[in-house]
Amino acid sequence: MPAKLIDGNLLAKHIRTQIAASAAILTAQGIKPGLAVILVGENPASQVYVRNKVKACADAGFYSVLENYPDDLSEVDLLKRINALNLAPEIHGILVQLPLPPHIDSHAVLEAINPLKDVDGFHVANAGALMTGAPIFKPCTPYACMKMLESIEYPIRGARAVIVGASNIVGKPVSMLLLQAGATVTICNSKTRDLGFHTREADILVVATGKPKMITANFVKPGAVVIDVGINRLPDGKLCGDVDFDEVKYVAGWITPVPGGVGPMTITMLLQNTLEAAQKKYQSLHA
Ligand code: GUN
Image 1: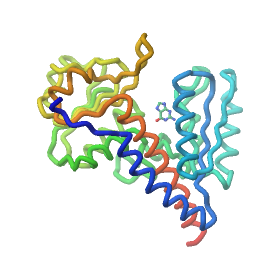
Image 2 (image 1 turned 30 degrees about the horizontal axis):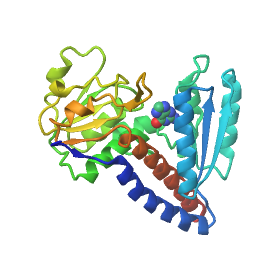
Image 3 (image 1 turned 135 degrees about the horizontal axis):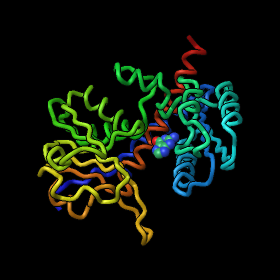
Image 4 (image 1 turned 180 degrees about the horizontal axis):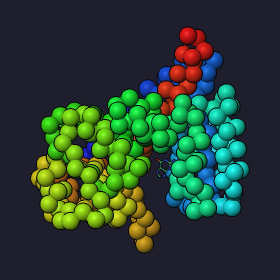
């Protein structure tokens, strides 16, 4: 396999050790980082994600609470809960797992979170500030992609980055972070004509489409860094990314695996954001 692996598990372990050490110091100073995770409904993938997030909090010495509401929770009741968490002193970060049931307006819910507790970075204040270069919190998956590039000391400045997928959660924000780091960025979407024409130009290829193994070897420039944000369950129960790893590993220079790539790093950046939210709280109390 010519491509080198960017091992998300290993990198996550390293960063989480540092986060846990900082959390212990803050806890000794009287502020234990606290995260509230809200899940509405019983989406099986979301259940796994939120469980992993809560477990990661416990492992890092954070306080966390998982609030799991039935699928028919009203938007008004969800907004009331968010307001209560906005005021709760032991909670520094609030995360509402997406997707929400269709009767709930996700935008209204995300806008209800205090931007100082918006550790997902989805509030319009954080999304807007990301555009201008100074968000309070960066969204966790885009932040994870940047950390993975940083871990291999990839020279982003002047590189050509191509993003496949233009979601608010991944595609748009990761394109902004790469642009700010000096890359020349192309964002492709589901309507892009001749996708391969664009992806084959990429020095850095970030794929977040939700389509299992859609990026095959012929989409990839030899030597490129390929970051696979996808996580899909195949009929046989196995997990795979949006990149056909078994083919692309022979073409790419670097590649992230699924599982064990971006996933554990996304949770790590959630811990990082929650730690920073708690540190800001400490600073505001001791200014
Ligand atoms: N659903 C898929 N990815 C995410 C994420 O990063 N945060 C939240 N809140 N929901 C998601």
